[in-house]
Image (spheres, one colour):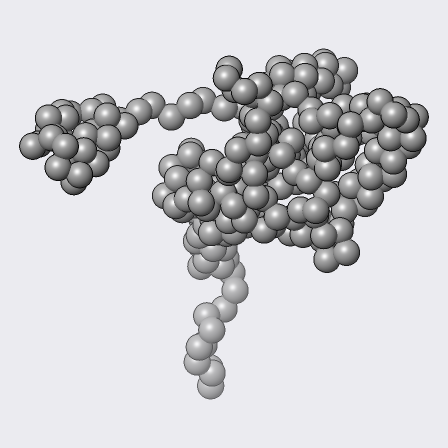
Length: 259
């Protein structure tokens, strides 16, 4: 970051040279994450049935949206008729301004994604639930336009979502993971189902496919190993069959007629 800032200062002719240009930097170690398995993901969604934020958890697991992107969704961003969502903003808590709506993480993060039929149905039910909450709140309701809000209509605090998620994991009898690991779970499960890396990159909103490939390199390596092992099994079986036929009592294919 410092190198980039100084390089900008050089271009603006504020300083004569970038003293950080020749500094060697080590390769950052990738963060460890613990994605859910398919069975664990199903167990989580089953436990979330009836939860006030069921639609949010389902959307998170099916699309891999970031926490801030989920909380920043507005109803105007959703087209439930065509089953799409426009990701335009993120909701964050900052020390200076509290809950604040900010642009997406990168330009590539601003995207339109397809919504699974299951998520469309959950969001429709969530909209009806929100209407009932608005009627119950009466004059205390504060309209924000967000899809996921408190019972009074105000934006949902990321910290409170984390608490709700931790409680949900405990109720489901699952190991403790970060909310962000739901995003990793989505990508890992898609990779395991053979979905192309380009599609996953667009769904997650990564700026470059190299980011997607780098983060999930261990998953791709495991899938490569499984594929190679499968091929090895096929080749060994073929060789074994050939050996069995050659050692048997069957007559040769081109046997000559005996007169």
